[in-house]
Length: 498
Ligand SMILES: Cc1cc2nc3c(=O)[nH]c(=O)nc-3n(C[C@H](O)[C@H](O)[C@H](O)COP(=O)(O)OP(=O)(O)OC[C@H]3O[C@@H](n4cnc5c(N)ncnc54)[C@H](O)[C@@H]3O)c2cc1C
Image: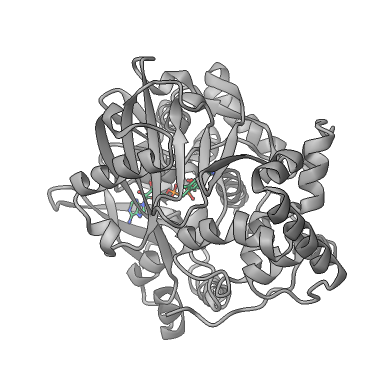
């Protein structure tokens, strides 16, 4: 059978594309390498009835269209959840978003005065052209607050110094947030009327499927199948060849026991990492594109899930660990995301998040060593006694974060141009699919527009013009102007750290 589209990856992007195309009766096949789960980074792992998210997944979008798709798929299974999160720093817990008076009292008179002076200094001498993450944040918050509330966590996440991280990343991730907005938010808690005005970092309620984000994508898979689409698990795509005689793509997938299958389709929609896809495309792309794709880098991530007797120690959804004496970067408390994430309310399930590179010491540690490390660290940060831990598991997530280094944008542009010139029926969507460090809503919007393009038989929408809030900017002068307004700092590339 010839499909309208062969879709690589059953994460939010791939499944959204499949859903949108299936609704219009276009035959699709989704090929997913994971043998068990759909959802990609937004899956929910089930360990003995305890459900673990790959990082807590808030469902919030400024795009009404995306929110409507979530409602359409998961309906009554979507909960409205309050957000509670804190920062752990030097033995103290600070409410996050910061409450100025609480933060001042916990930091002590001397430290708070120094923080205010350094903030005032930053306001008096603003950095006109912040190039690094450190410069960008220092400019907005002052040096001391940067050190306390941003430096350690950010360096844990990226495994590099804040001086080596591009200001783009700060602009994208903490866009709209400043000390002023944090204080305003703390003093005048009032819901903005328009969701577009909401600073994403500060939202205090969000939606969440009652059994975790995987529930959304399992429901989506079911809908796609009911509409006639195929979703095949345990099939890793290992080849993408365009056959000019038939004008079709021949996508080859490999199963767990090494068997190969070919899937023929008019279009390919790929949410797999660019680095891996480009190496598979035949006829081969120009050398410059192959080289550019090989140069893209990723940061990896693992969660140690601990099952713990519930002693009522904390009820936050998550706690950032800004303490350099432990390796854990963040602790999730899944029962606070949804009580149904645990099978027995006498227990909690915590996710201790470690940021690493595939192949480094953390990544290659045995599961038992990682569980032992997590038990020690959860006790050290005063969130549980290690004696209360009854079981544990380890969930590894390769390529959790596309890295924004000095040259990533140039590499992505090179690949994008080569694909547009040579493979007009191959479409990139989603997070690693486009090398964009974005949330589900962005991944979904790129997939929704791609489905529209395919159905229209023309690239009516430029998916690269979807911003991190899943808003689409029209091409042309007006779109360019709007897109420009999205970037509050100049884009400058830094030397790649070794
Ligand atoms: C720690 C963390 C916290 C996050 N928190 C949030 C949040 O609160 N809210 C939010 O909206 N988003 C959040 N995100 C982002 C969200 O997880 C992603 O934006 C989203 O999952 C991207 O969807 P995707 O389909 O593009 O990619 P993915 O989720 O990566 O899915 C890609 C799929 O392709 C499959 N695949 C890869 N290669 C192949 C191959 N060769 N053959 C077949 N299949 C292949 C993978 O197995 C995977 O299933 C978070 C991410 C992380 C890492």
